[in-house]
Length: 130
Image (cartoon, rainbow, N blue to C red; front, side, top):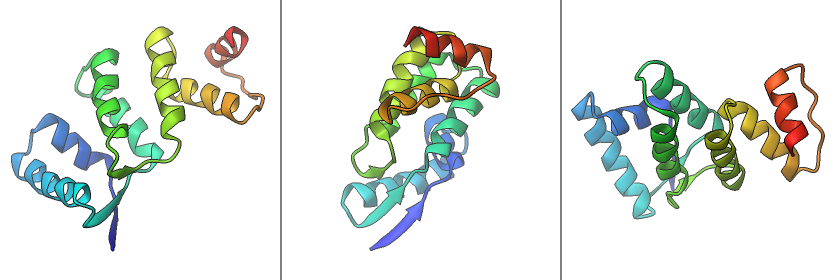
C-alpha cells in the first residue's frame, strides 16, 4: 500500500480553501485514505505547525483552531501518534493561557509518569496545577 507523510500546508490549503486546486488534490488523497487505498501519516509536528500558522498568520481564535485540529486528529483514516495525548492537550490549551506545546509536554509527562524539566515559567505553573 502506498504511504504518504502529509505536510501542514496540505491541511492548511484544505482548511482555508485559499488555493482551490490544491484543496481539491488533497481531498482526493483524503478520499483514497478513507477507502483504505493509501495510508496517510500525520506527524505530531504538523499539528503544531497548523496551530501556529492559523493563529499567527490567519488570526484564528484558539477555539476555532482547536475545532479544526480536532477534526484532523479524530479522522480514523489518518495515522497520528499520541492522538489521546493531543486530545488532553487541546482541553488544557482551551482552559489555560498556555501554548499548545506546553500543554502537550505536560500531558505527555503525565502519560509517562515523568517529571518535567523546564525553565519555562508558564509550564512550571501548569506543572504545579497538576
